[in-house]
Amino acid sequence: MSTDRFSSEHTRSIIEPILKWIYPAITADQFEMIHHLIRKCAHFTEYFIFGLLLFRGIRRGRPGWRWSWGFGALFAAAIYSALDEIQDRKSTRLNSSHLGI
Image (tube, rainbow, N blue to C red; front, side, top):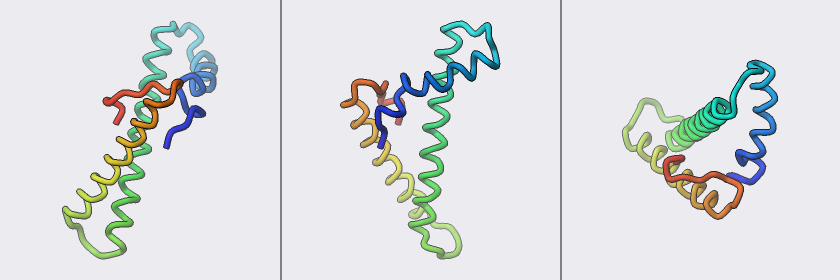
C-alpha cells in the first residue's frame, strides 16, 4: 500500500530536477501537468503488472484461458486498489481521489 514516501511532494523532488534539466524553460503549470501524468502512468503500470501476477497465480500453470481467471484477477486488483485509495485518504500528504483507482 502507498506510503508518504511516494507522495507527490516526494516524487516532485526527484522528477522536477530531471524535467528542468531536460527542458529548462518549463513553467509551473507544465510541470504540474507532466508530474500528474507521470504519477498516473506509474499507477496504471503498477496495477497492470499486479493484475498480471494475480492472473498467473489464479491460473496456477493450467493451460488455456478462462474468463473466471481474468475476472478473478481484475476483481482482486480492484479491491486492493480501492483499499489503497482508502488508506491514501487517511494520509495527509497523498493526493487521493476516487479517480485514482
